[in-house]
Amino acid sequence: MATIQASFANAAEFFNSLLVVAAAAILLGRTIKGFEIRVVGAAPRAARFGGFNANQLIILTFAISGALAGLAGIIEVAGPVGHLQPGISPGYGFTAIIVAFLGRLNPLGILIAGLFLALTFIGGEQAQIAMKIPLDVTKVFQGILLFYVLACDSLILYRFKLSFPNRQVASGTH
Image 1 (tube, rainbow, N blue to C red):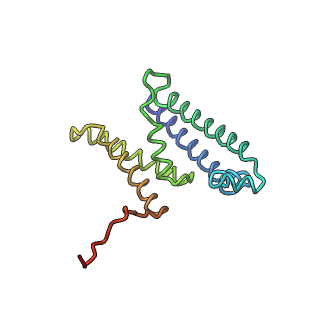
Image 2: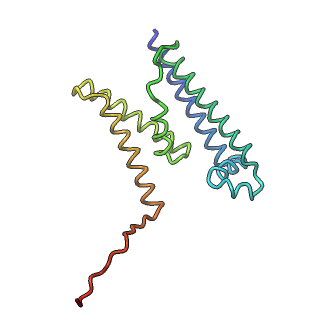
């Protein structure tokens, strides 16, 4: 009976998460406030020239982000376990950074990236059980994935120029 209740609780948490993603997508993509938030995030100086109160929008965005992080913490603590445990944080903050970069800071992309990283974590646990591979291999894979995404961004968005110190060209006459 307890497993059935836990399954329903997990399903409710999942659907609540989908609602939060949908609300964030609508807020950022379909409202004036979302447009203002995107402009402040992309170019704060341009937002000030556009008449947006950048400081107020930054504080609003921090408050919304903090509330969502708190909600995620409540779901994690009250969800599968049902009570607070010592050492509850397995480092989800670092994983969240990878998810945000993989999702391109888009709510729907973050949902897909989160599911993908969850699959890598579950796959790592299964590999640990079946093949006696250390669980740290999964963390290394996730770190390499973040490095790869950041490297691709750097190579696509920025033009690197190699400069060498002035070298003397040898002349043919002595």
